[in-house]
Length: 319
Image (cartoon, rainbow, N blue to C red; front, top):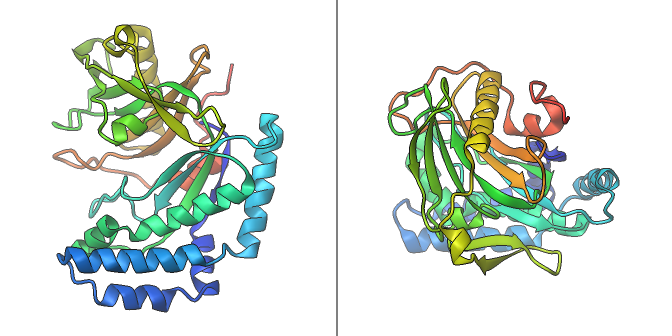
């Protein structure tokens, strides 16, 4: 996993308290009846405006600056690019799953920009989609809260997701892998259909392979901040972006992550550009699978934030 640090939900609550945002949010949501698209949109806009106008608490900003400086020293870069990833409380559970509703910001540089991205992650907790989804859950909804993970960026030549079971049937003997060129933004944004694989956990046999044209990819912006979209040459867009050996490695890593958490996992991964394997393969996020027909029994597990904080003791040392 890329080096990084976590900003806990305590920072989010401190932000709300210091800026006296709770009554503002409550007032905006009061008039947003579930199903009323215009009212929900207006509430979301009002909350976003109030949150973006509020400063990140000094204590939080100072700690983020200190932690970012430590990352900078470790990376040997005065302003290393990082991913700022939302991790909402209760994002995945048996009652609900709203992963993907909150924002992630890639290729962020500098402590000030990291703090801005942190606040934007908090703002995304009140997007129209998130507000509507929580309203639909009723009493099953958690009180909104968010931790945020900050990780060194992986300049991904290939990236994707992996389910450590068949997400359609729940078959635990299979691993489903999606893969595309570049950063994962093209897949998340629906701009490409990734290559699709179904691999046996036991034999590593590729049971299904569906290659798709991947005509665009996202790469680091030449200016050093953010990512840019570019066309993929025809000879590469139709080619498989994973080899059989890489698929086997992904399955092995998926099994280790699954064993550690004690449940089937939905794993986001990236392969660093120009890096040898296995060192160049990174797990950037993992969450329990919640889309199968039968939810697997889970044991108590650490959160995604704890994972970024370095509790992933089962992860192999770099060789």
